[in-house]
Length: 174
Ligand SMILES: [Zn+2]
Ligand SMILES: [Zn+2]
Image (cartoon, rainbow, N blue to C red; front, side, top):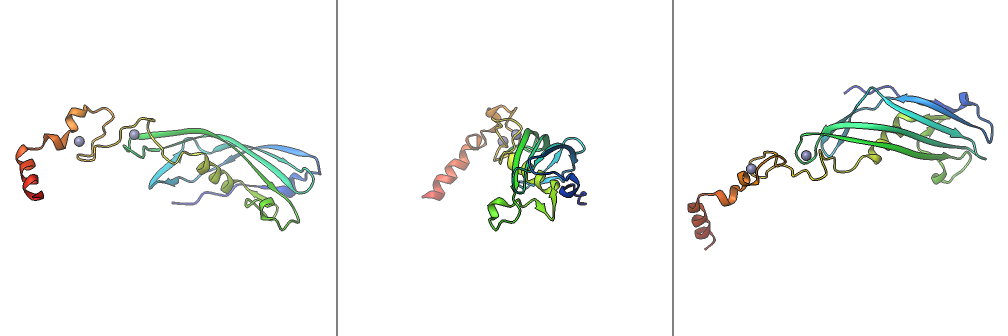
C-alpha cells in the first residue's frame, strides 16, 4: 500500500515569540490502520485537524484536535462497524533539555510531524475492540453464521446432534 505524504508544521515559519500562540487548521491524510488483524479506513479524504501552537517560556506547547470516523469490520462478526470519536491531544517540546519527558517525539528539527502524531492519536482514541454494536453476539462457533439476527434455536448444534453420537461419546470416555 502506497504511503501517503507527510504533513508537518514548520516552526521556523510560524516565527512565534515567547508568549505568542497560533492556531492552524490542517488537513492530514491517514493511511489505513491495521488493528486486531483487520483493516480500518478513514471516512472522508483527510483528517480536519486544528492545531494550537504556543511558546510558553522555553520551547513549545501543542494541542491537536479533530473528530474522525473509521470504518472496517466488526471484530466479532465481521459485519461493517464504525468508530466515531474525537482526538484531543497535547505535546510539549522544551528546547535545551536532557529530560526526555519534556521532548516531543513528534518534533524533529523544528518541524512537528503531524502525520505521525495524528496517526498515533487515532490509534490511542480507538477502542481496542471495534464492534458493530456493543452487544454484538458474534459468530456461531460451529457453523460460522452471525448470531445477531439468528434464532438461537437454529444454532444449538451440539444438542441437535444425533443421539447415537452421544452414545458413541459415552463409549469413548469409558
Ligand atoms: Zn458485530
Ligand atoms: Zn451455528
